[in-house]
Length: 141
Ligand code: CMP
Image (cartoon, rainbow, N blue to C red; front, side):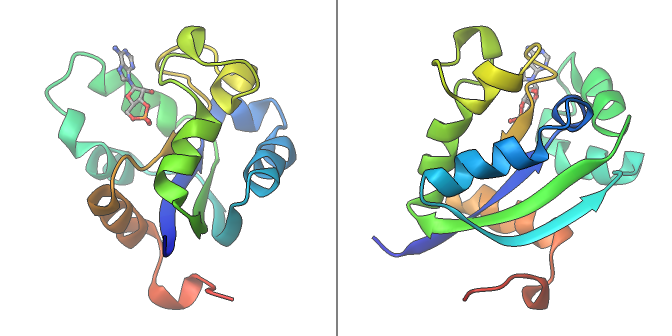
């Protein structure tokens, strides 16, 4: 399988737990590399565009408020089968259903405040990476 790239966000609740290093260690221990990284606070417009597919959902407003409430860490992860591998490392969307040892089990608080985001398909990864990274900000070494 060829090397793949995926997009990851460490969300505000995990940032407040001072868990950047622990979360990145999970990625690295499981064969993913950090190919790009930015620490930033999302604007309302950025969060709304990022989560545009959910704009009709009842939780959309709450999700945007949460995601803009504090800094986040935006990352490009690379590795073999990176999209699916990242989803396994993160665990189920709902932390209550996430397997032991996964990031969401360890650092998630609720469905909304579930510690991390990861792209769910190659198309999403391309779109999401393109929203936040230029080609020159991603290292393919
Ligand atoms: P994420 O992987 O960032 O993608 C969309 C997010 O919407 C998801 O993680 C959850 O944080 C959030 N979400 C999905 N379903 C619900 C829900 N039923 N209630 C609140 N938030 C939700």
